[in-house]
Length: 109
Image 1: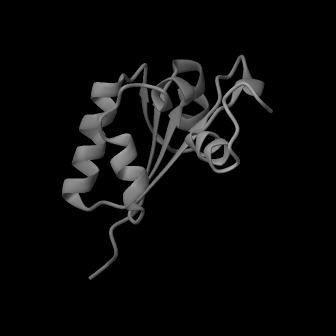
Image 2 (image 1 turned 30 degrees about the vertical axis):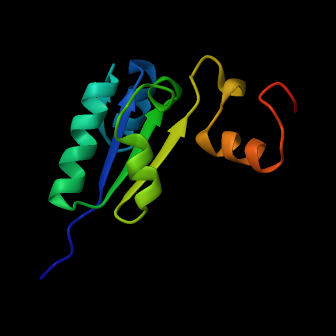
Image 3 (image 1 turned 60 degrees about the vertical axis):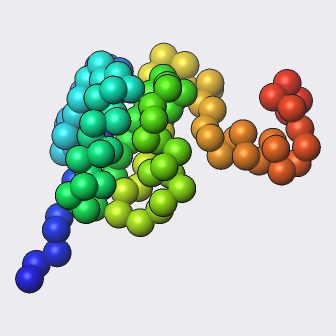
């Protein structure tokens, strides 16, 4: 039995989607938190391995599935990219955890 191929998926801003499409990703330009949740549910239910890249806005959205997928590990690798026009404004969930561990608040660098 052959292994299931890993899906490469991008959800987020249309300008970023263009680059990911050229790199061979499935793209969902302009996706919202509900669409992200549906896709993550589908991937979990089908047990499909996937690399899912989301933009900063989706990473900070009210998605109900992001934390679950992040905490599970395994078949779904989830990462995020900064806005195309503001690359220096990258902020990830790992940043928050590091600040908590170091006893820093969000205003201290």
